[in-house]
Image 1: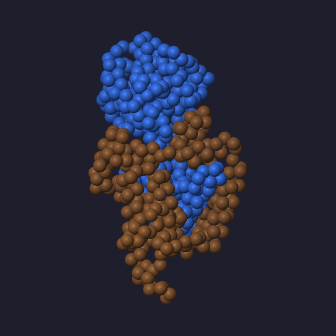
Image 2: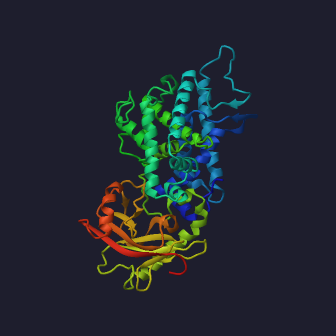
Length: 226
Length: 291
């Protein structure tokens, strides 16, 4: 389903190694979804002889941070030059993503060691060796998400059939506006305007309902990082 | 939330506006902010809430349309902006790519890559020859003047692109072909290009700038033909017939929304832009067979 553009595209590979901005963006957009899928799905690994499983990030902030760290790492001078240009780039990238997760885990673990459970001397892993990406949402957050879901559902119901088709192609298949226009035999300008209009309307509706500022995430749930 | 897009609790409304722009698809490149949006999100709970809400809403929008759970376009753009800002990527390459990024994201890329590579070669060689011929679509007169070349790319992996020109008539491509472009900008005087065609019923078909370039299409100095990273599959929204192709070389890139009003006037020679060079060419789209 995903396309492997490196290392087969040698022009792109050369430009990537030179850190040409457009090449970096092409590589980013070609691989970001499969990296995100892996980070959400999780993976198994062994640590000190123990088989463990990272159950994936559920928290959007964690996913966002891990995505950024992965691509920052992959686009660093060392990583660009270190890629052998023979194996699929996705394998190389996934290895970087795994390292990012494990480094974050080790950092979290070292922080956790500063605290001691009154029941157990060591911090416990959930589900026998499973690293949970995030706990279940707090009741207020869950309620807020439910409210947001209802709003989006009503919003989608209000769209025209053409708008829904555009959303389906653009949001689901991640097609470019040009490709979306081609698929629907529409004028590209019309697709551009429709996509912008749809998202603008959704933003306005979120604003109008006051979900942008107060819900669905309470301030307590937001970690303020230094 | 204020009406300007700034979440309550955030003192700098530019960040709220940047998030809104990103959500609405108005910008994918780093914006002129006092410091990076990613850094701001780490220190501003209000904007962080807004970003999370928009990410969730975007995901839900996909899910409501039957998409599997996944990262949303908003999150992809947000992460890219953070990466680009930290890597100090300006969003512009030092050299232009002739393969549109959209091809690389789609299944068509594998099929079109050999064509695109072939196109580059043909453009360089073909334009070099073409500019030395008289008539047709070659640059005429002043060597310092900008010019535009059209190329037809036949369907199929192994088909060779060819200059879209006839010996003594207007440029011509077949409806099943893809249209490609190359430009000359010898002095570098012209920084922008607006490119479109007008059909017999005054319908405007935009080629450049595209929606990803709201600020206009930027040109570089090109003493030799340089491929434009734009191709047009004619079958999508063209019909067999005669078109007027308009290439407006301007000092600065022209914003897309300002050009709509001028497009037909320029094509019909009813109005001209000062300090710009406007080239009009006749272009014929044939229904099939050899042009």
